[in-house]
Image 1 (tube, rainbow over the protein chains, first blue to last red):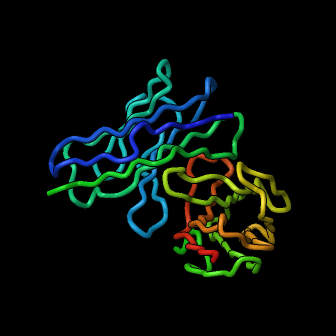
Image 2: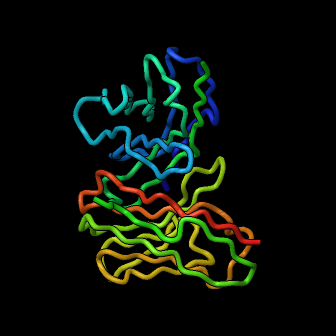
Length: 114
Length: 112
């Protein structure tokens, strides 16, 4: 069974500072990788996804993530955060072979301080 | 474009009561899912439906049933609610290539 680990449950960060959210997954076979963002009292919105090709993926709102197959990681980064980036971020994995099931990590809550 | 619509948005139940959470999508997606979200545990899959007429158990199916009424609608039923089912429930859908899942706004359920 696939599993997803987000190593940090909370990340406080000052406005305009960089942030990195870590994600590791267990699968040894081909996967699709996703980062979703959840703003307070809202549903989940896709930030970015890795399907194939370039290992550096750019998403919305200035976020990017790098797929590292050897380390089974998909860390999310933003060089300069804004107050509006305060939200919870979820890493998710789907097996290409399994098709339907999307497995989520436990989430990382980012609090941007002025 | 409505996307994925869930009803109700909030619900309080007494232990032992039953209820059905409704979900509908207007994107002509084949696959639909029900997740529950609990603090620190991310989203856990309850049930999913790969296509109209099929349903399969996810990670935490106990205490729930589902119905894929047609291609648009996928409902989640709690037959006898328990306090452990207090959670936020999300419905999602995706197309056949499964490259992205679209989520509803969630239903916040409290069982007292």
